[in-house]
Image (cartoon, rainbow, N blue to C red; front, side, top):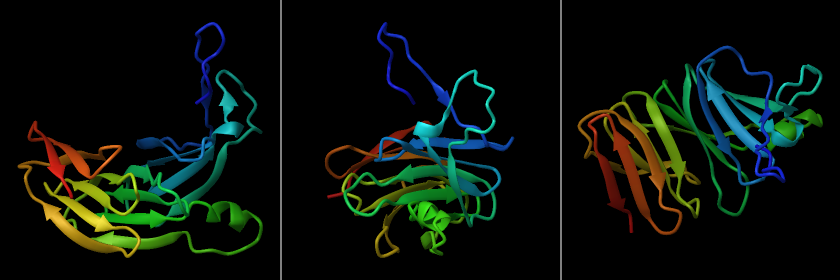
Length: 199
């Protein structure tokens, strides 16, 4: 996204290179010029907003795609950056019942000729599609909401499961941490929003 113009008008940019598939995101990263999207092809795409094409431009030589993070076996339904200090991390949840935690900065290193493994860990435990993932503000916890009606809380650094919240009676569509503190909110197809104190 571009900043708002002088006369109160907004300017927008578009990223070319998206396939004609379903779409998840965009998720804005902690770095001001990065964002991620995902879709039905099983890949997470990392973009450079500074290289995005001005809306209406027909110049196909300008590309904003930094790279693709591949590993899910089916559509990716959610992406979330970790905003905490430290190495940049990105989580994705998919229809394959898994959550993957990535190091997106390796995409730029790989272009320089270095080979790196982008996927840090694969989290397994949900019994149906993972609809939503979200890091806690300090990056020590990751919440996931699933079609299986559960919320799972993980330690993303160690890659281990910590606890399950089984309060919804239908699919969990979204999870989000409060910006300060340890409160977690969720919304589901059971038409409820639930707030959990995770202290």
